[in-house]
Image (cartoon, rainbow, N blue to C red; front, side, top):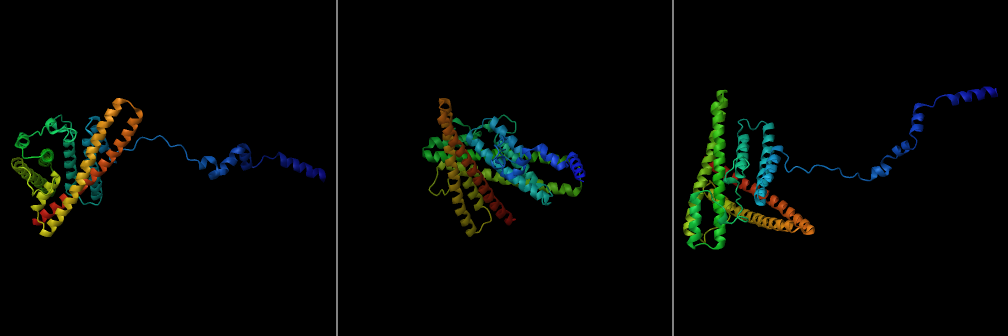
Length: 362
């Protein structure tokens, strides 16, 4: 009986172990380490950061391509900062349009056409449309003095020369007038960019073959664009008349605003269908807006000074000073971009209010 129990025990020993037991025996200490799980050192110590590509400046690839092109063109820092603001606004508007389109709220395509026109203006304004002309010249009055820059319009040049030689302007007033002349030049450039875009749209409309009702919608959209151009042309005419008057008479004590964009908005507001109370409220908001613009202008000047200092230090070769100045320049650049976006957005909001008031007249 005892021998029989011994034999059965030997047979049990000779039988292969269960698969799970065999796997644990083969893994040995590694299995224990695996069971440690979240308690192991590897799980608790953060992994070294992976080397990633720097984050893109914009979420839309086409805007990133424009931004990279502008950097390759070595545009001045202030011009780059202004371009960054315009591209951010363009991106915001494009995402808004995508949401409208998904909800079926842009059936006539007018909102999409507005985006195309605004992008065309940006391309022309910053010389990114492939045309080598005077539009790529910087309009920064800080790094380029009035004597070093052309106004590109003989009429504006004549007004500027008359103002400089009249003796009616202080140096601060001449700076103010120069900014107004530059602003007027940019308005004219934007108008011509829109005019070219509208010309292309009209040509495609005439060549289009489609249902009569669709052509009617397109014609209505084109009429809206003509109205926009008409408003811009009227604003340009009013602006030039004012510049001519100022260059002859000087700035009077009754001048309420100093920034060209605020002056434009105020002139348009006075001709809109605002009540006296609404107009007074708008005037107060313009005062706050002008303070915001002045703050942005201050940072633009500081950014340009920082840029010039950085170039000087880089040529000097002191690495410690170079690093310090680069950090300061990056901080100023980011703050200038942020303020530029807020100014641009605020101006859009104010312009929309005037536009709605004008439409209420009709």
